[in-house]
Amino acid sequence: DERFIELLDHPAVHPLVQYLMQNGSYQNEEPFIVTQFSARDPHPGVSAQQLHIDSRFPGPPYALMTIALWMLNDFTLESGATRLVPKSHLRSSYPENGVEYPDEIRAIAPAGSVLIYNGSTWHGGGAKLLDLERWSVIVSYARWFVKPAFDMTQNTPPDLYAKLTPERRELFGF
Image 1 (tube, rainbow, N blue to C red):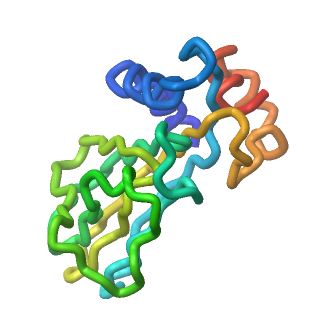
Image 2 (cartoon, rainbow, N blue to C red; image 1 turned 180 degrees about the vertical axis):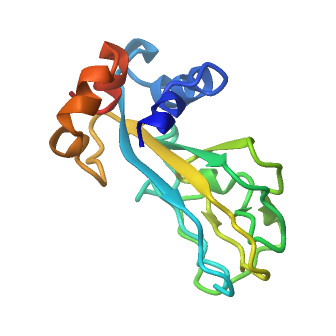
C-alpha cells in the first residue's frame, strides 16, 4: 500500500541503513536496493520460527543485507516478539535447527518501534502464545548485486511508480 512507501527512506532509519549498506563498498558510496517489502502477522498458536539469516551468507565482514522491521502492534512475549542472537552476524555458520541459544534476546517494544539489524543476524519469530495481532512491515535492503526476493521493477504499478521520488525509484532498482 502506498501509505507505507515513506518507510523506505524514513529520516530516522535511512541514515543507519545507508551506513550499513554502504560501509565497506567502493568509497563507501555504492548503491543499495530494496529486495523485499512485505507485511506479516503470524497466525495465533504458531510455534517459534526456526532461527535463520536473511542474507543467505553467514559471517561476511560487512552487511550484505539490512532489515528494518517496523512494529505496527506491540511486540510482546505473548504475541511472539522476534528473537535475535546478538553478534551472530559475525559467525561464519548457520544456526542449528531446534537449538535455543543462551544469548538469545527478544525484541519487545511498543507499536511504532523499528528494529534494524544486519541480515546475517540469527533471528526468528517467537511462538505466538495469545490471539494478539503482531503486524509488522519488513523492508529488506541489500547491496546492489544481491538478487531481490521480489522484482520491484516488474511489479510496481505505474500509478505508484509515478508517485515515487528518484531516490525511491533507485531503491526499488529502477
